[in-house]
Image 1 (tube, rainbow, N blue to C red):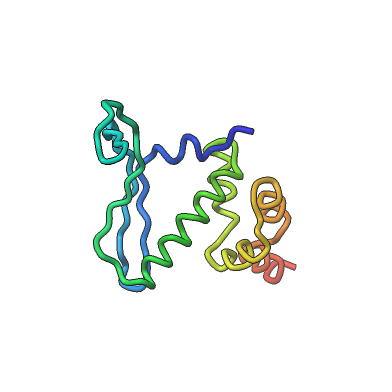
Image 2 (cartoon, rainbow, N blue to C red):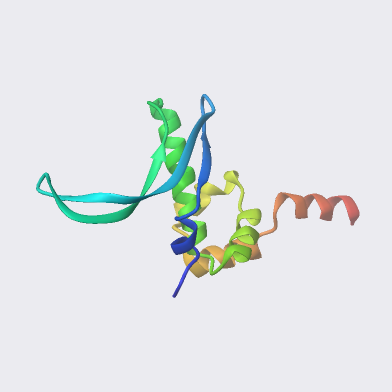
Length: 128
């Protein structure tokens, strides 16, 4: 099954890690030389690079968690529209539950679209 991550990983993305508001920029660097046993092989490849300074451990942990959730959501989506819809349904407060239950792929999509969001709860309470 093709997923959106194969396209999404090639796009430039910006993450914010807390505490401290660290900015992590993800981009693809093209034509990176391939080394084998310390020697260049003459081959090149495209590589994903994450640009950031020396972050504190707590900020690094927060960034890695956000990156892994972003990857998980992109892998559960088939295209950009589906990714955005799924991203809108999942908030940072849901990350712990998703990691605890190891929701991936179709099970993540099913959970997200069958669980009411806080905005939907608010609308139910206010307008009913």
